[in-house]
Length: 153
Image (cartoon, rainbow, N blue to C red):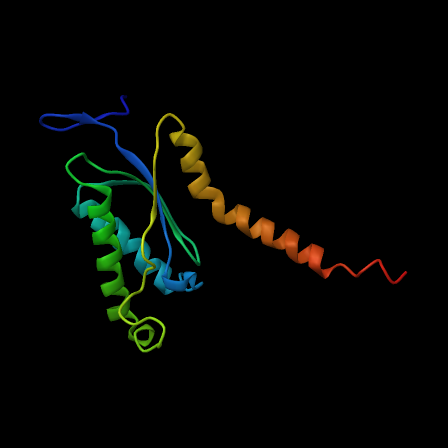
């Protein structure tokens, strides 16, 4: 099976690794909010003809590995994803709009986009397992900080 996708006048393989964060990188993307963002991203990507390869919503950022058809730009996809998910989040969770720091903006400005070439499998594994790696790293840091000091002995 070819990695290329066929359309009427083009064969393509345009795959991107995209990362974006909530405003002020607040650690708010958990529980029902994370679930709603996951569903919205899947829905809006499907509507634009994009194929989600991997999606990981973490507490302070979102990783998306996606195949975007040549007729759709990355900025168009991100405009839809960030704009429509923000509207959806504020309507589903109205208490967020009342916080003084949100205003009408849920997401931080900008995003990180990287093209995926021959190392697609490696990036897919990174997106899929990054949360486990971060939790392991935090546990190690906690253990180091919890050890009693050896200086007084």
